[in-house]
Length: 114
Image (cartoon, rainbow, N blue to C red; front, side, top):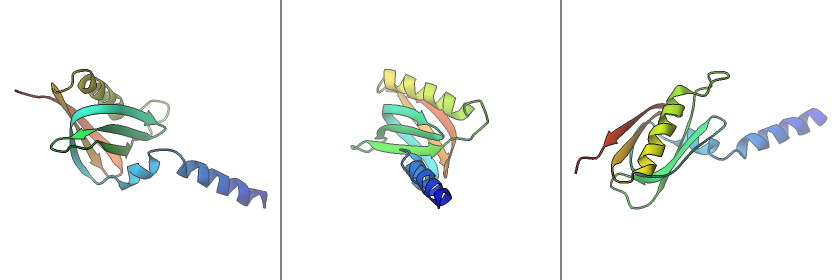
């Protein structure tokens, strides 16, 4: 009986982690953020909040990063750097995030040409 309680508690804790459910529902594709309001990583969930190109309301994109053991996923690390640069210089850069559901697969930073 105690095993079932422990398994149920573990399952509930996993479901309570923000971004994990979102990461599974993010469709594959490349997302172009014109502005970045927030970026973060909790466990294996990488999250970006900002305005997608051509939209007026903020979007939250969550994707699972690859577990490479003791090292943080290199794509997620690079994506965080790009996102911080885009956040620091609004309107000068676009952040392109590519997801191959449910995984974060690539990030690029593109300069906006006036």
